[in-house]
Image (cartoon, rainbow, N blue to C red; front, side, top):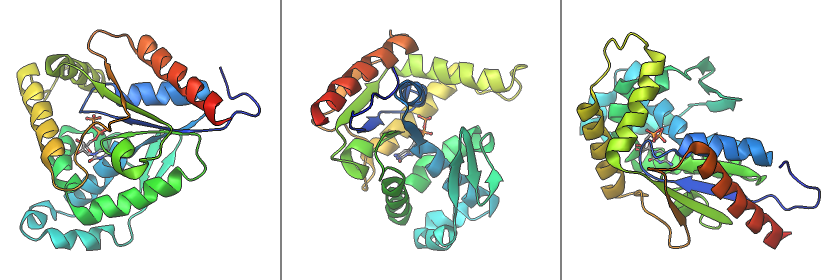
Length: 235
Ligand code: CDP
């Protein structure tokens, strides 16, 4: 199902709450269509990791304007599946729970949002991208030809996150239990949906897909079918 000659490449925006299946779906859709996948959550996670590494996170809670110096010369790049922060591979570190717990705070800061939004627009300039996040269809690319909003039951999402964390730590050492994970995910959804700048919300034109009872394969098929219909229209 690779790109046919003469087909116009579109922008596919996939938004939704934590662990709703965005990144797995987006990555596979991109593979099938021959598009580039951009994980914007990884960018917010990278800024959060940098704040933790520099020990400035608590200070930022009192003086959020200090975040500008953190952003001053930051470099976030994608190399295939790897994420590079200021030249170092941080792919594994940005998924740690200490980052997940703080990322909503960092993402709520306007200078962070403005900076990453500009980087994301630049990355999507050539089109032919699948970008996932919280505000891609509403703020970053409101003109994206295809907008998807993925949702799933909170318990189901906590289970998925648990399996993901378990795969990285097979002996289960230091793993939060399911109830705690569900609580953290729900709190992050609340924070993301109620923040002042670019809150998580569904664009009026977005196709909502509930993934609670869907297989990944089925989700990917649904999004690819919609994408091909859109591509045909902009041909
Ligand atoms: O993978 P998961 O769904 O847990 O989250 P993620 O996509 O890696 O995003 C982590 C956090 O970054 C979210 O909870 C948001 O606070 C923030 N984020 C955002 O504000 N805007 C985006 N476009 C993407 C992520």
